[in-house]
Image 1: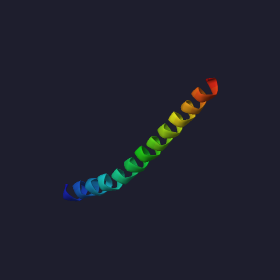
Image 2: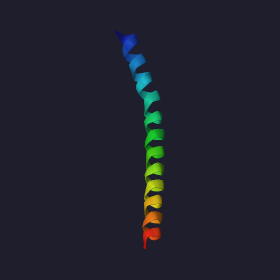
Image 3: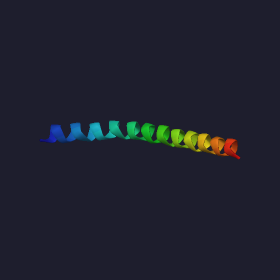
Image 4: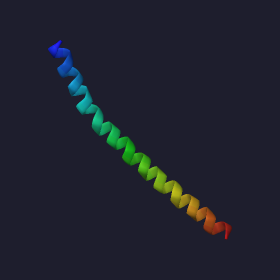
Length: 45
């Protein structure tokens, strides 16, 4: 039982950076989308 628990903890530690990378990429894409939308609005005017 102890071995499986330590293995799970190691996996969790490895997962956290992946989540951070995904969120930063999502934030960047959201910013890009906002910029694109703003540019489109300026073109409309």
